[in-house]
Image (cartoon, rainbow, N blue to C red; front, side, top):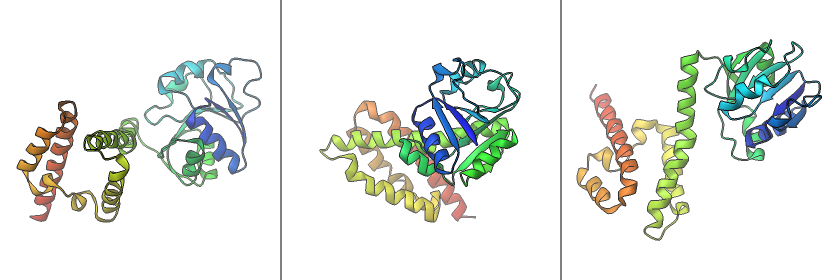
Length: 241
């Protein structure tokens, strides 16, 4: 398939590498090139890999034609952003695209939230991916879950890094512990994997933590401690059933 990707950032570059790996002919261009005559080539699919808020603007700059599908890869957006185009779609991969090489590997066999033209299903299948179709409301919640799973986890580890540095240690010292927790969630589920003072109802320890850490770090700690308390309570109620 001839595919033109608009947007040469990490996501666009990841898709370019993955598509080429499975035999597609791919043209990668910057978003400010789309209005230039001939910039799109002769695509069967145009993929908008641009910030969510720019999708509608960039889509309007692409000539309307039934010769190709215009699609985006945003997780929380639907078909409306693609405006007057005749054939439209979207496919959002449930993977982190931190670098083009890692992203390309992760796209192979990934889960995709999809919608629109049948060509989208063909493209996902070419990457050996699994496609799911969600309602508009479900898609926003799906993307919220993806954001928490990846972006918020990274932000949480930045919180760990700052706490660790205050006692002369590094994030790398705590990464094995974080990996063990993820492994436990995978094998045991979230409720059984929970450990620590909130799991035990040890308020004295949590109060000591709050006294010791910087005031700027306390809100994040309190929010996560409250979530851990709720999880521990759900586990207790389940075990009493």
